[in-house]
Image (cartoon, rainbow, N blue to C red; front, side, top):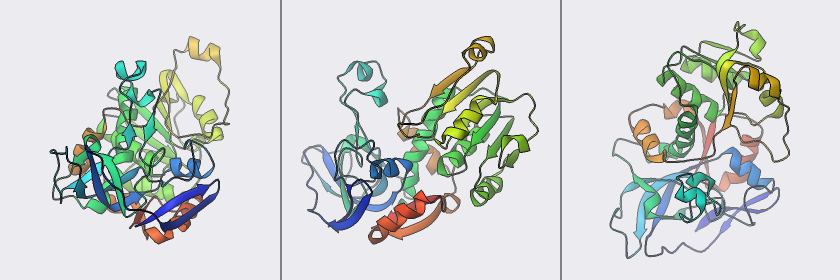
Length: 329
């Protein structure tokens, strides 16, 4: 079969690899679509993946075409979305319910071969069957949506909050859609990319601009979400949190990214700074929300490229072009 491979730092190719073989509790999925994510760029930069080469792709969905001898939960022909998370279920964090912080954390498409291929293997426990009305090529959006749902779990959003989101890429737009549905009084979005900002405006925002100073919020925001991972945005966002407010670090920053905080202000104004890491007990809920139409795939997916174009898709994504880019084997 054909698969994309990140061979070494800065080098991605498409090549023939052996067809996957399922273990007793695994399924083989014929991939319908695989989304690109900032994590894929980090892997290309030599971060996150413990070893290279690796077949990337942790956002994917498709049709079950093979099952291990111990699989009874799904059948050949079922359409599924795949939660890429792989936990040990033995370490302290797993036992305490913080599986996403597993000491042996692994993920399909990061530590093992992923969905940027014609076929991919996944544990049956990670497969969520999709209702018939969902286009499977759109269901690659479920994994990033599950990350956004986890972010709102961390926020414990309260009614009437004033929300500011940095970044209107896929994740910023998903956080926007969830903010509107969790009772925010206002949702503002800032982005330096006018095309992406236009999409946020199309989805409905209270205010938008290239910089928070373009918005009239003298008291700041109750909730500030960084969906960029950019140091300048993070630094600015920390200063925009209102008294008793919360800053959520949601965007994935490079390992070397550093910002400064004002400890006295955090103490004196009771500001919370928190983070949200990947997926935790949120994939099934994201699948339910997706099936209910919380996202419009035709708005979120800007490009559908062939698997043979995977290196070009990575370059396009790295350049900040489009919104969600998916490859279609």
